[in-house]
Structure formats: structure tokens, C-alpha cells
Image (spheres, helix red, strand yellow):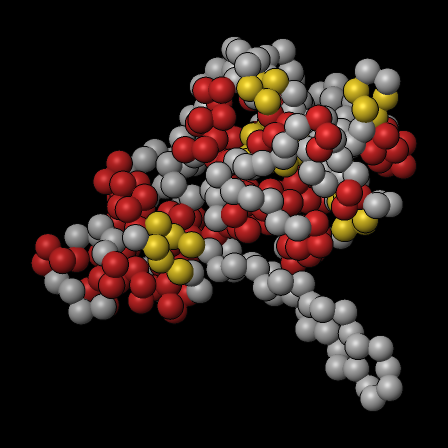
Length: 319
């Protein structure tokens, strides 16, 4: 559960994730708030538009149509990866969906239940992004567009300290929906997990204003460091989850694995988000490097050793 940031902060955190953002009209106050509340928010929902052409797509999503007034989402992700912000607040993108799915998103469970009910207001609880695509399974998804979906989702998850299981497709929320069509949400969540595990993009520092000139614009907020929950990490390590291609039990495992790779203790190919046998062996080596031995170096992370690893490799630890 989270409160959405103000519109200016929302745009800034997207740019801080390395996205090209276009602000369309008075998007900051274009919403459907008179029809109901927006928030608390619990996740991000991805859609395809069934339209062709960026300009036409942005216009339709911003204005809507007679049966469904706009805005139809918070942002449109174009083929070239540009994010067009068109609304902020409650938008007509999610409709009624399954309450079991909402609970799974809130709890970030490894697998979503079947969306076989339409009893919960999704417009209230999700950020929504429409992606320019015909949705016929043939229209391609350019790499720049897929990367933008990944970055948008990671930026919002990073801000709220959510994991990739907080990102779903419309087809996982509302019975009868098929979008997005052309890639799988599990594959996209794997990409988001990888990005969340990385050190976020640092915003460029603004130039210093010369005397008598207009002060430079305020810089974008510095993205938060990745956060690793110790209790969730230990649970993942004990579960010894399977290989990539199955749902990741806890995305913070990827953060720790990348740190172990940087320390020369784990092969890069094994940093797959699953805290399996190889990762436990590598972490045991890190524990011994920290001065532990015997049962204290069993590969199950502890507060002290994990905090030391985080201090060296750029993530924070919460109990």
C-alpha cells in the first residue's frame, strides 16, 4: 500500500530512471477523480492500445471516447520508448478485476491466482500504462519499447520499494482481457527484477548559474538505493528456489547475487534471482571473508554480513 507522489515528482523519477518523458498538456490535473478516489496504490498495470501511430494513440488515450472518457492511462509508451504523460490521478485503464489478484499483488506472491472475478476497482489501486501496439500478436515490440516498459515499472517500484511482482498485465487482472499480447509478463518481471537489482541511474547535476542569469532547474530526485529485506532473503535462501523461467521468490536475491558477482564469489551466469545452492555457497565465502567460520558461515545471510556487503555494493538492508 502506498500514496502516489505529486505529479512533478512522478515525472522526475521516470526521468531519473533514464526515460525520455514528454508532458502532454496539463496532464498533472487531467484525471477522473470526480468519479472516485485514486489510492492507495498497490501496483503497475501494463496494457496494449490496439492502435497505430504515436500521435493518434496519445490523443485517443488522453481524450478517450464516448463510452470510456479519458484519460485512459497515466502514460503512453510509444514504439521508440518515449513515455507520454497524459494524466495523473484516477484514470480509466483497469476497470473491475479480481480481488484475489489484488491481494497477491499486495503480498507480492510468486504466482498470481486466476483472474476469474470482476469485483474490485482497479482504477483506484494501479498506475496504468498503455503501450502502442496493435495487439494482434504480429505487431512487433521494439527493444526500445520493451526497455521503456521495464524502466517505467522499475522506477515506480523503486520509489515505493516494491518488487517486480507488483507489476501485472491487464490480462492478469480482468477476465477476458488479453493485453499485453506479444511478450509474457513473467519475462518482463524478470527484466524488472534485474533492473531493480542494479544501481539506479544518477540524475545529471544542473549547471551552476552565472551572476544575473536565471537559476537552473532543480535536479531530479536521486533514486533510492536498492533495499534488501533480510527476512525475505533468508526465506528465499531456505526455499532454494528453481532456475530462471519460474517465478522469482524474492527480487532482492538478485541484488545480493550481483554484489557477490562484483566480489568475485559468484559466476555472472548464476545471478538469476534464485537464491539456490550456488548462491548459498558464494554467500558462505563472503561470510568467511567477513571473519565467520563453521555454522556461522553456512550461506544463510545475517544482519552483519549482509550490511557489510550492502555498504560495499550500494544497497541498504532492512530487517
